[in-house]
Amino acid sequence: MHSSTFQWLLLAHIFTISSIYVSTATKLDIPRLSPIGGSIFQNPEILSARLSEDFQTFYYNQTLDHFNYRTESYSTFQQRYVINFKFWGGADANAPIFAYLGAEAPIDGDLSFIGFLTDNALRFNALLVYIEHRYYGKSIPFGSREEALKNASTLGYFNSAQAIADYAEILLYIKEHYNATHSPVIVIGGSYGGMLASWFRLKYPHVALGALASSAPILYFDDITPQNGYYSIVTKDFREASETCYETILKSWSEIEEVASKPDGLSILNKKFNTCKPLENSFELKDYLETIYADAAQYNHPPKYPVNIVCSGIDGAASGSDILGKIFAGVVAYKGNLSCYVNPPTNQSETAVGYSWQRCSEMVMPIGIDNSTMFPSDPFDLSIYINSCKTSYGVSPRPHWVTTYYGGHDIKLILQRYGSNIIFSNGLRDPYSSGGVLENISDTVLAVHTVNGSHCLDILRANKSSDPEWLVMQRKTEVEIIQGWISEYYADLKELGLIHSTINNLHSNQLIN
Image (cartoon, rainbow, N blue to C red; front, side, top):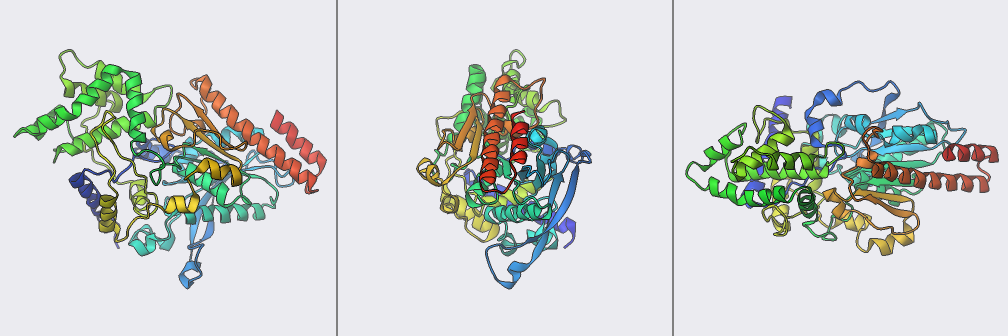
């Protein structure tokens, strides 16, 4: 299949989903799950920026299907992983391995922006490993992206259980290859990757000593979390930033509908918002604005604080501006001076295409909007969701599978008995924290959160000049917890006679310092 034909099919597929979304007014898409804001993926030069030579790329001959013994299950594909050896204390010293679990995107962006591993590698003398999620980046089964995404039969191997089994295979291979049998592994992930990290620790405790799960909304399944939790926090963030900004946004939706109902209403909206192509309906504009507000709240990182930027534009609009004029001023403040806004030309990212399948198979997060937020009501409708996924892929999603396979209901009652060594970190300004673990479950399954934090902020690169004290302390707390896990592990190795006391003492001194 020619690449142009394949791209057309992908766009047609996305268009199908979008068309259903528009016609039903039911939320099939969800705010992006990623440690990194979506704008980064619109800048290829950022992702292609030259990495330090300390990062070495490898490929593992990965098993296609870990859970079946049919002939085709033994097929393999090349899975990309990256290692940084610079700080490693070596296998002889049983120095730890920090493993970053890639999620719904190529690993390249994580190498550039995830800082928790490199920022703490020297302290722990850690080997750094970054593993790409199957079906993303260069880790594509069936020889090509065209074949891998062709239909539900080839996409059927594209799920979280296969992904964490991939990670287990690669980590065990690395430990064997570098004779690092007793090097403790700490897995780290953010957002969907944070969910993977916590699930990995639960499913593969013999591979990973512990997990740092940053901004992992593991409770946003199966109605454990109220459906409107995400958009309630977005609303709270904007209202706390500015009451007048919140009021303007709240009033804007009916204003958009009123203008759109006029004979030339869409033309008026096109001019007011300087659209890149004519609006076909008012939903396109409302969806664009909703995405801006959600992104601003989710990635409300210091020192810029995007929510404040949007509200400064809305509240600081030119004198005499009407409601929609103020809303557009907020768009410009957030997006900057562009030639046009709304419906800009974009290339469908791997994340958009890949996670569309994941949402229509197992990652059914019932995110909806009720009348208590600053957004138009848009409740989650499972029957419409299922029908649209059938239309797109010919298969039905499994809305209860995540909680069946990984748990989630009565999480405190269950995990305090069989879970251990997991940090669930959150920032309470992150809308996804509404589906996160915010209370300690046991002495070793811990919740670390900050009132002002945003999505995955704790695992991004530290910035000494601009990081607020509360963020510094959050990271410090996480490091101390991991340090405790590793120290206890070395003590266990010593007691079992698997390491010498001199090595144990050496590690203890390093971790203290």
